[in-house]
Image (cartoon, rainbow, N blue to C red):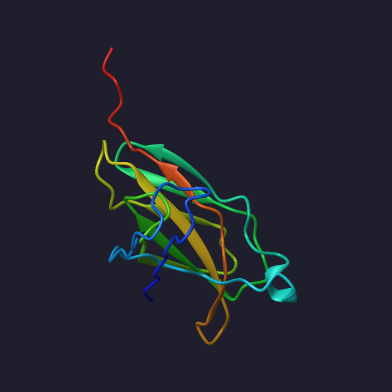
Length: 132
């Protein structure tokens, strides 16, 4: 998807008439607030970082399964790193590098693998324990 914005008024921005086209990549996930399936979307995704791993936790919903995504920039883009069955509302990421900040989000998915709901974003930075 490409988005082009052109500001034709200098009322708010001093860039009147400037073409603000960007080729940066972004992910857009549209959620219909009236869709009952989205009423129970994960909104409490949290993370705990330890040396060499990050644990994600959230409240169980009615999803068939959860797809776990990770990125290194706030807001994405994200890459699918794993899937967990609906009986599990946690995920342990052991493929992280200490000292790197990671951003996570989880999408709920139906039995046909269609994703229909996206969680909030959480971040974590795994670190080696400090020596005494």
